[in-house]
Image (cartoon, rainbow, N blue to C red):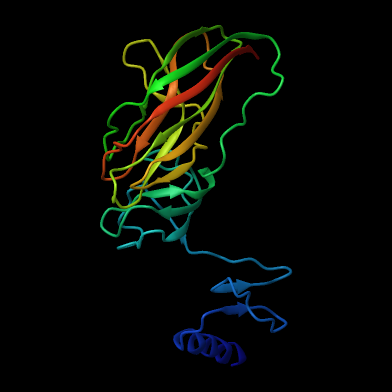
Length: 251
């Protein structure tokens, strides 16, 4: 009966338009910066557990709101999914785009005192004029370099590129990274970060996006450079000069 009374009281408080809600055992008020402030010594928050079949699944959660967060219990790593974990909808209710929050982590740091440097070089030049929208794949966003490595050598690449949407455009999402592609015909353009890429926001004004990555791809010849996947509905057209440095080192 006490639990029912507390639940009703909480709902009544929320319905009354409270600005801050605290859930704790000692009655402490919520922090003024938090709409919900939860404190516990030995408990956690159990989010809704959903089984997603793909990153565009529109059936598991009917009409999901943008930025809705769920815990995906599927361990699938196909169809745009990256196993179980927290996912958020960066699409809309009709066309969801579920992205794993655990992947939004910083990429690998640039090298510090790397041994046995075999080759260094620079990538400098204008970015491509237009990066097409709604892309399921990566594209090189500017000049590239071609490198040849042995089986035990690693490619390191880091730099920055200024990009933006047309003035006045609403924000959308992109993935920026360091990429590589074998010169063998038909080879895929791959993010050096693999599934641990970061999702960035791009607006109707130019911003500078940093990228960094490292990969030991195996013996062969590869094109390397800054890559972009434009996940939004608008083309990226306000692009400027790319600056990057690469190194080939023995691993």
